[in-house]
Length: 535
Image 1 (spheres, rainbow, N blue to C red):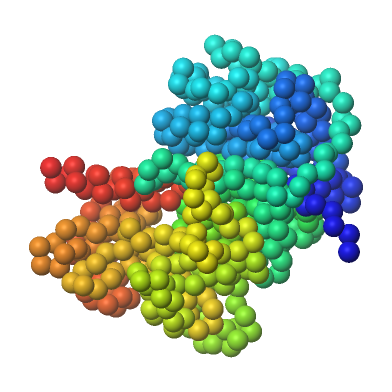
Image 2 (tube, rainbow, N blue to C red):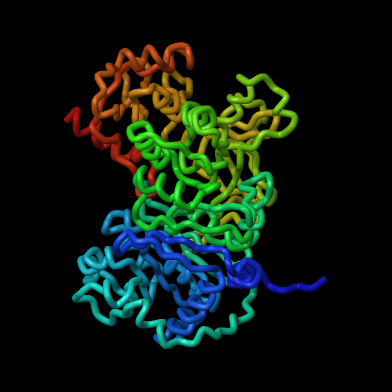
């Protein structure tokens, strides 16, 4: 059999050759205008950028950072950097300033491509950066900002005179292609270095019918930021399938997302629950439908049953629940019902729908106790979730030791159950489980139930010290702006849905629940808030 090494550049080459007239649509960050071009044009510009990067000294193995929203230029950068053998390092602009400084210095990036809006942010950080030598602002000359930064290039001017002929080097498929850092909620961010092989195997898997099932008939709104967990693989899998790509830029509010779904006739999208809550809030207030949308993938945090029901019953949009992690490229599981499960009662099926799902082929899971013994797949027993697979990280970037155990299993840090059908459900992060009277309480399950209340925008549960029971759950609620809902009304709503002793003793209302840079509830900030409140 032929043995051509897997290379990311081949995905865009395929799209340009066999889906060359399919559009890539971007809402531009400079002025909100819509930019349209095709995969064929994208490949030509990507090759111009590849030549431009070499002209300013980028070499194979160099780390080239990006700090940008989802746009056509960012997509070009992904392929131009990795395709020539350099490493595309996506930096999350939502991180704290010191985290961004740490990440850029730790990766030793030599070049940074960034949206014009982030120039002031970089100017502030510049005195602390130790390796950056050149900056490329991802805009045209008309919108190029004035800056005190040294060695600055305008993206469009830089590529304008470059040839659109570029021969991608033949790389070993295990060559590093991209670098993504965890959000660092429990310490310094950690880098995960992906390879051409891991990215393309992951993309093949998530395009399968048991995963996203994306095809050339789809129009994909890529709301997952390209700086978040490798864009959930969509920046590679969509060109591989020839799907039309819609890139929202920086505008991720409910109105903007709905507008793109309507005007571009989007069929598929993927996002964390917080984005879909914003979309629902817009639709509830302004009206509107989601007629073209067939399917949404929801991950990042657990999906409330109420969200699944609203998508499917009100808007006729199928929901696929998923789970993954930066360390796994990121996809681990997808929740699609098998024939065996589809024969269950509606109530039983719905219990499975809120689970994170079965592993896609290429990934294996198990749950263990604190002594390392494997636990039964009975849907009840909770254990530490372990993962291994074809695109699971071996060690963190620059770490001296492997992150997994002697048998190749990586501890995810999650607590989970696996049922007899093979469906996994996250019950909590190991550090967020609440132990009350010697028994475990899942903060995730309580949050999902509370979020089902129609006047609750967001709910978080943390464990607080209790003299009698060791820990008890505290429910923290962000309610609708004009809501008069009381804590007791929320607890009454939750009664009967979990064991009585699980119910929180208190409900605290806040104007806004803090989120991490990845859009997840920031439990660390909430614990600090509660500690300061008692001080």
